Image (cartoon, rainbow, N blue to C red; front, side):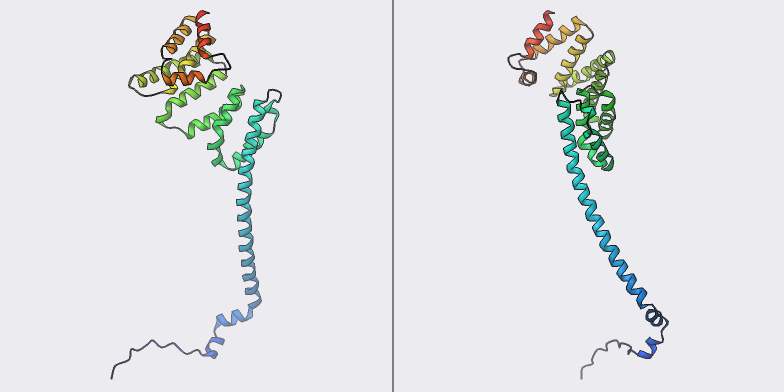
Length: 245
């Protein structure tokens, strides 16, 4: 005869023992309170879900509005008959950026660039510096230096800008000599000539233009100079005129 495995026995439910238990008595006396508590908890969950959905909806709406404000800001800046500083688009955009700091990475640099072009340097500086700090990395240090000098030029600190540009040009020149392709070197070279022009350093300016012309046979330089072509007027024609002057 095989032995049957013994299963653990479940204690029998004794109604008299349960009804006399203090917990049962408390539940019995507070049924209404428990029902209200459960209903309240359920209501809180519903409200929390709705608030979360509303928050997500607001975020999407604000992200969309940020793009609209930014587009309006740039359009106003491009319109010579419209002083963009009088527009509320930038103020509205700043409000959204303060609410969603993650959006700074998308808009700060572009805002700074637009403000610099419009000679609104004091307004551009916070956005530019925030971009520098956020993208601080040795691999793009030269680009930081170039951008920082843009602020000096906008503030009409031409002599200091020239000093910085010369220092950067030495660094970039070393990279070019090592065989590194460096578009920034060409842009900085043009900036150097322009700064000499601004400071009326005619001999230094002519020397830089000659250096640039010697590089003009390179495809990279040709593509760069074509960016400055307007109609039938070429940048090379401008260089020739400046060398004569």
